Structures are given as C-alpha cells and as structure tokens.
Image (cartoon, rainbow, N blue to C red; front, side):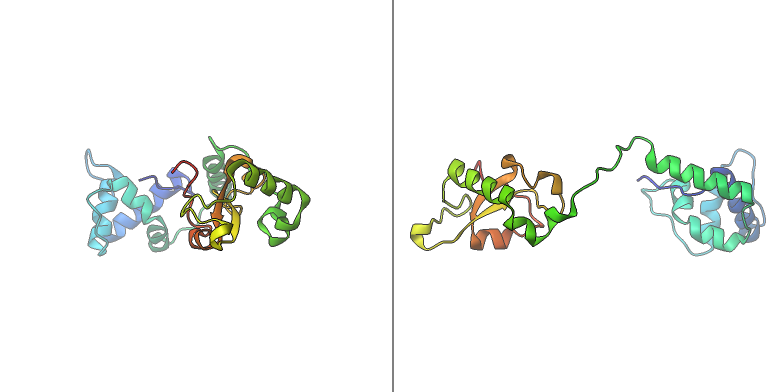
Length: 186
C-alpha cells in the first residue's frame, strides 16, 4: 500500500517524536525505529494497526492525527521544503496531462459532422445488428453506435472507429458509461 507523503520526512519525524514523548514518555529506544515507537504510541491512543501495514505506513496513514497532537508549526523554510517535496512526488514518473476538449463529453458532440460520419462508417463496417443480443431493425430494435470506452472517461477516443460497437437501444442503455464491455468479438 503506497502512502502519499505531502510533508517532508524530517518534519514528520520531529512531530512523531514529540507525539511519542507525550504518549509514551520516550521517543527513542536503542535499535528501535521511530515508526515502531510511533505505532506503539498510536496503539496507546486507541488506533490499532492492521496486520497488512508496516509501522511506517501506519504512522504516515495517521500523519494528520499525529500532526494535530504534536501541535508544532513548521518554519517558513520547512513549509517551502514540504511544498517542493509534495510537488516532486506528485510529478515524478507521470506524463504531462493532456488538454482534452470538454465539448466531446457533451450531447452537442453527437450532432457534429465528424461524429455522424464516423457513426455511418461503424454501421457500414459492422452492420445494423446488436453485437450483444443480436437484435436488428427488422425485429423492431433501434440501433445505437456505442463508445466501448465512454466519452466521459476517455474523451481522446471519442472519434476512434476502433472504440465503437453497434448495440440496440436497450443494450446500450443497460451498458451505460460505467461498463466497458466489448461485444465485437463475442
């Protein structure tokens, strides 16, 4: 379990030591990690650590609680370090965010020429038959062209033919935008 740290280790350790001193009367013992002592202090305070969490994870999970009990304010320099550390942790290894056209997620998108053209291509490619239940217009079904990965969650795939499938109105309505079932290969 990854715990997101939004403050510096140095500041948190200082707060944790003060908290342990207040709760246990000591903040260090020979060969003991501050996190093991912190987990003991949290246990004394009534917060029991789950078996699947390490003492360090448990201390960081209860970071806000420890900080509220320690009642020390970080210096201006520490606040700047904390902000820089948090920004670094939240950007390391992540791709820059794409700017997404919010128009794609609206109902007006469905009236555009680009969508209607792509819709027709999908109907020509797959035919007017529901890929889920097999209903056709001959059996009275109204056909919809469905986004397998919903426009709301994946706006960049809104105009991709590979993200479209043909469903009858009932199957499409039942699928909604919470399901990503691909019925093309069934």
